[in-house]
Image (cartoon, rainbow, N blue to C red; front, side):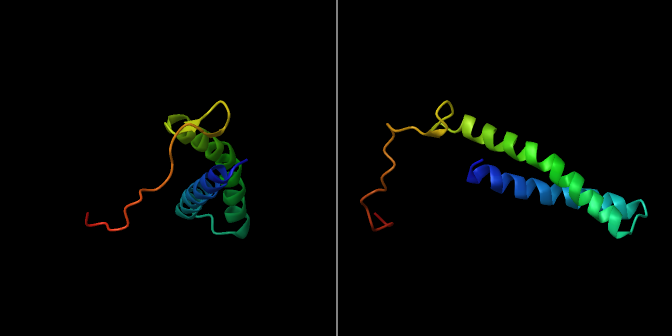
Length: 87
């Protein structure tokens, strides 16, 4: 698992679990167990969705080699030598 997957899992988990907690509150479930269940279900759904989102981002990135799961070596990633942004 790479860093992008971890970031996507955290973002997905917070969104999914938050939506489930709001739904539980709107249905009248205010117990700790209902909130804990929403968090567990949100995390269980977020792990595969975060990995899927990260894989899709990398697949659509032209500078990423999806078969090797690494950046393409032939691209020049050096920054410009210009230091003055007004040029």
